[in-house]
Image: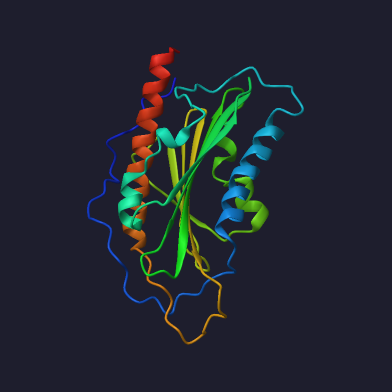
Length: 240
């Protein structure tokens, strides 16, 4: 039996989101349209989920799942801490996901524009409920999306949330990724920034300011904790 998920961990939002100083020295990777990247995150999650039960032959032991997902995940994932840090969401797009005896999943996309007009951002949440196989052994490898696109994420342990939580950051791209595992449930939160490409970028121009990475991580952890609590309440209403 797993323990109750830690909802009062050490990663509280200890300070409000701050706008970073000029980050002209930070290298950045190739840009991709936000709608394509967000769709790829959801699509690869679905492909990975499908691969889990394509060949059958489940082991006897099944992970304990004490969460429930609904078709409208955006109804539970309001992400107020990230919304405050980023200046608010413009569009929210719930994805229906899927239900299967082996795995239930759902996702939610929140999109917005940066205050300086230089581009936009996307916040993507994906919840996977693994009902037949334990996701623990493969959790630290990251998602299929990460491996397929060759992200150079450096993972760091985050205490006090679920059974295991990792936050990933990259030296060549913006944003962050937060992954939480609790029993058979895996929560993935992705924040991506995008610059407008109407004109060729000036290599001498200062890069757009980003919110402070530590403040964004604290906000993501706060919103993750709130979503986990909401989905636990849904599970209790449905019954074990």
